[in-house]
Length: 391
Image (cartoon, rainbow, N blue to C red; front, side):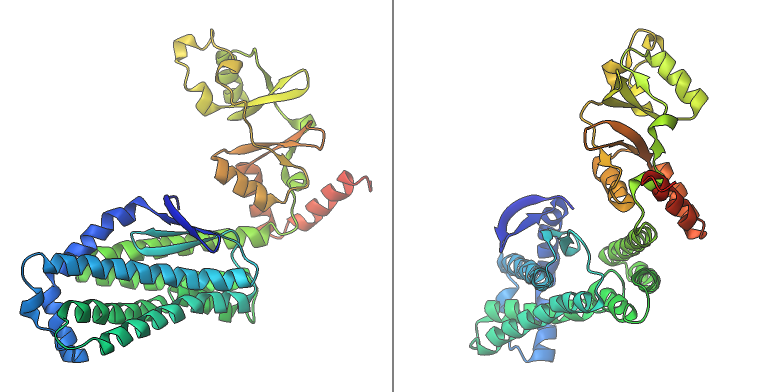
């Protein structure tokens, strides 16, 4: 998740997503409009002794709302640092922490598959939230009577951080409780299977949250339910792909050089479109005397109007700054590279920069389907043996 970088703490970039800038004043407004109601609840449940009249007039409610929401997101940031510092202790890299619409998000370079690591990383955030809540309650308890504004802000933050900790421990994968569930499941079953089961539970909770959000007209809860459902599905899919492609390399699934369709720089766009139709390909390596000089796709060709396609050449529309992979790159890394660069295929180069093949999403998905049916081991073994000169 991208955002505006506001600083770096213990080597971790901290970012603000644009949705955070949107929700910050909204939350401050919502809290400000309910200041007297919240104060009444705190008086009944915590014995706060706040005078609602003293904080309910003029600009005070809005200032209190702003202070409370700043404190809330500070607690969320500390929550994410709880996850991150424990993860770093185990040797995992944290690319950034981003504050956004639904709170905070620590971006891991790689999610832990060791169940003990994941368990302690997951529980660290709620533990920090409970600690923040305890500190806020301590300030609240030590604040003298009559300091209505201070009592309101710290009493409210004490409650919110405890609620945050409890809510995050719901087994709604990929929330903290869902990751704890996956960690516990992974003690006795493969990580991919544990992920699938935890994701299924997460989807059920997402559905229930969505129903509650609709019934109670809470838009934020509906958005959270949608996020949990999509994130659970996405991470389950990624984990399954990673498990299926374990020990599978690009060379095992790529289209080899001798089987590859290519074009030259002087090929007309009209001819290119004709070949795409006949050969059922939507992307070609562009070669110049056996050297790869670029890639051209259907999207590139579409930029030229139909009446001008005889006049334009591939060199006019092709991409020259092309990402590539090696034959020994693992298949999952190749797929991630495609996602990162927003492309559907990658040329495969040897150590000398020579084109040895092409790997596409369709190659990977075909391999994925074959592996899932149990048909790959012999195919992969045969290809590796052939590649390594065994027969």
